[in-house]
Image 1: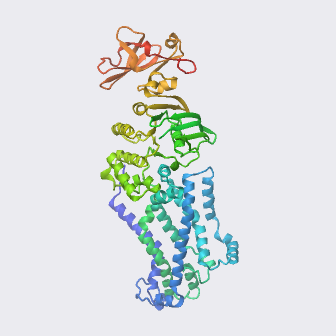
Image 2 (image 1 turned 180 degrees about the vertical axis):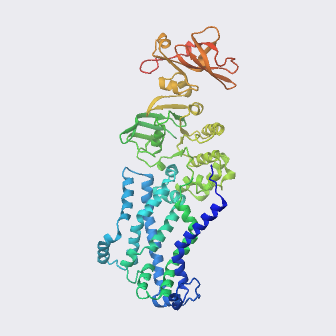
Image 3 (image 1 turned 45 degrees about the vertical axis):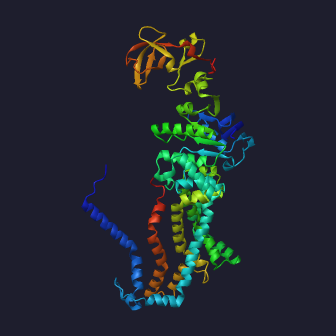
Length: 274
Length: 332
């Protein structure tokens, strides 16, 4: 039996949901509002109506070269995601379609690496990067980001692949497809929604990753996370500029997330409902 | 050509033996049906021939060539799966073209072959649709189309009709038989439905627990089952298998009599019984009779037999059609 929902209940529930959503979003909203204020307005006290100046943005770009960091963020997040997919698609294929007794254990082990505090391996990783000349290099950081997100990518893809009937892949094998033919022509196109949402999520995770990107870079390979962190100490008292820098850092991923939300939700609930 | 020979083929998954040891010869152009109850190993046997499973031991020859360790795509076999296994992201035309594309055929040759296959299977108007937009029967035809374009040595069918409704199953059964007459290519067909086996096969292979119980033409199996398992499995309704005193009288541990080989009388006969359920099918009536000292016996009678629930009747088995089985379950 369907549960009876009165209009009054509905209104209260909707209002409550809006309040919670606004509370969660408020810090981001206030940062964006502050970014459009002058420094004087920003320190004057609480106000939701900015004067609309873009002076802070200009100064941030002039002082620290936002686009250099932005470009690094794009290269690192997209590059590490592509690398992760290249490794994870065959890995997830073998676990989903050719599992052994130990497959479950391997999956758990992969996930367990995410439970370890990153700081525990900071020292060895830093030394490896230093000795191999990978410090402050885009390539090194791309590998690092790929590795830290790989367990999640493999897990997500494994879940999607499990939903694909094995008979379809067997049909491809009967039709003369090689292993790569099977993955390229049949598995990947069928799993596109899953792969796309994995890709989006991984780009977001890589974009937001702040522990390694700050510690393993200085200038050359530094992405937006490093940009904000380097900006916050000298400019810590200049709220409008700091807000402008933060807004610039989160805006690209916010916009991408907004446009791809349908794909993300579809991908994340893939297989949940037939 | 499509001779397939299995020699000492066995298959086990870990400690579980699915197929202990099988020898089988399938002649070129034959329609062979593997039939047996669920879990008897018939699908595994088909998958071993297809190359989708590796044999644990033994050899598989196709047209005299040892293919035991060859990849499925190299065996020149085509398979139609129970779930159709169409590629959901491709149109009907692309589905049918896929094996040709994998074989590296030219675009023109592919287009021609796809058009020919579509014509044979009445799919010409559906070539640009995706599998999701087709009915069950159409999907099955696309799966068959994908198989025939390759001109394989043999077709393998893994319970291809079990997802269809009864009416469509009948139609598709005829279409597949018709296709076999047209193409004259070896076909191996797996089913648990003995009606499909009886109606389609040139040769039936009855499997039980991974062993071949009997190989023969449908009528051979029907008339002279080698053992109790085949006797009980082939024929619908099932053969009546009777033990005890009535069997002793015929010098057997078990006797078998098919429902159509029992005479009915209201006044006299060998076994007395009371009619339980009478199933009227129009042309026939199946009577389920509680026979004294024997148990439940099924009788196939005329459609207008005039006997109904609760009637006392007498049954007399046709002695010439009686099957006798020894203590080991083998026919005497």
